[in-house]
Image (cartoon, rainbow, N blue to C red; front, side):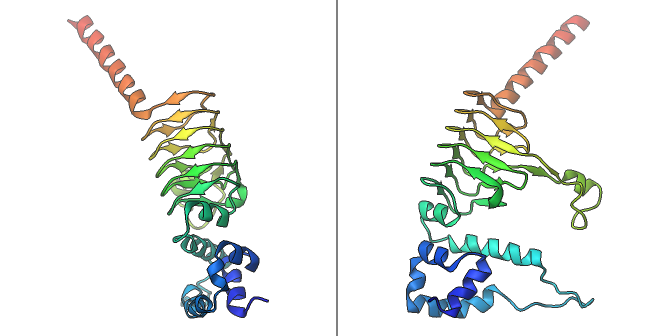
Length: 233
């Protein structure tokens, strides 16, 4: 039977003890558990009270703390170990400092690669097909809170947050740092170049380059300005 320190850690991370032991086998060793017993009080500070008498730490804080500690626990893992620990399917790899928001709403295929510092927001629903590669620093969003901010409701109401399901197909390559907007559907075998903002649906086999598209637009504007100047003269 697991000792109390493992049960306390599992409760803090909101994970079963068996899951922890499978993902971090070092926790079976007595020296590791002894060190963990010293660290646990630092990871779960006692509740404090604000001047009003209200607890500073809420249930939301507890959920966020569990998420933070889960990611800290993966810092010394390999890409495949980290993916398994975070519940991704077979063959997936996820690099350090990448984050998945609302992982319970992520539908991820097999053999997906997620680069360093990527942020996958699944709060509005996120689907990623098999064999897709998400590059370094890529941000994929499924919600937007701009109306909440402009209405002065940040931190007080979530009513104006818009959630839109985002879909990325199979065998895609999204180079970083690029941004995929909420509600976008990306087909299969799509290539997205670095520094691209994807704010529209992309068909199968499409290639999108933000910088190149901007250069074409700039060239078109310059040509139109030249035509207008010629007409005036």
